[in-house]
Image (cartoon, rainbow, N blue to C red):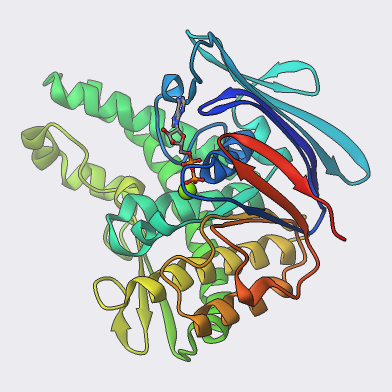
Length: 357
Ligand SMILES: Nc1ncnc2c1ncn2[C@@H]1O[C@H](COP(=O)(O)OP(=O)(O)O)[C@@H](O)[C@H]1O
Ligand SMILES: [Mg+2]
């Protein structure tokens, strides 16, 4: 699976761009504010149906334009899928092979991961970042996950609304059966993925950071050895008082330990970035082991925060990656000089291919 071609119209500073991509490695070089991150943002939008920089589709609109559009041709098992995302000033729409599609149709056709300088949020900030990271992987390997997760979200919303409105017990507990069955399913699938992660992560942390003892701890969001149904029953008075269901998969957490210490708050910026890279590469390895195609990896500002030695380790790890990679950088990083790659130059929102001599 790889992006063959991507095209954008009126995306931020780009009037348009067209990218004919290499199936393996693509390097995009250019000065500050040239449009490097925006290019990756466009590819990310095609695989995630949302941006990693903003939740406002209007922010992506270029000057004097009424709509922005993105298209990609993605080769999947020797056929081409056509993906589209657009915003017309009112709403965002996804298209898959010519038909209007739900936003979940895009990630299935274009699984894609990002490693960027703000990726350290995954290590440093609240558990929500780690839940979405975990869920991306579970979504791709467990066909039942998306439905269970949607059911859980819906029932949780309804139950919380009933709690806030102070409705009677029957109106609240009416949600408990479906809420608890979907919660147990979501948690079990997440737990399985966390176990697989624990198996794969150590190897990548060792390769990237040279640290040999990595531990992953998954907390499902409520007490161990208690059925979620029981928590909902026992905690009802407290939930009533707080107007919210305070335990459950929406409170799950993934804790990371390196060399016997919690990663959060202990590792440097450069280490954080490589830890994120290790998390991404480990998760991609899980997908590959499950028979899925290797996800596309986007890396923004390759060298930022990294010493020459860390850049070298990062480049070595990427060389072994079997899927498509897009890397942006200010100038050619020494660690990548010897690799064979398609090269692009971007400046003032103009993308050009650099032909090899
Ligand atoms: N909606 C927009 N319309 C026009 N220009 C924009 C828009 N959003 C951002 N920009 C401009 O794009 C430039 C940043 O692009 P970016 O892709 O982040 O550059 P790089 O990653 O190469 O440093 C900035 O000059 C910014 O002002
Ligand atoms: Mg940038």
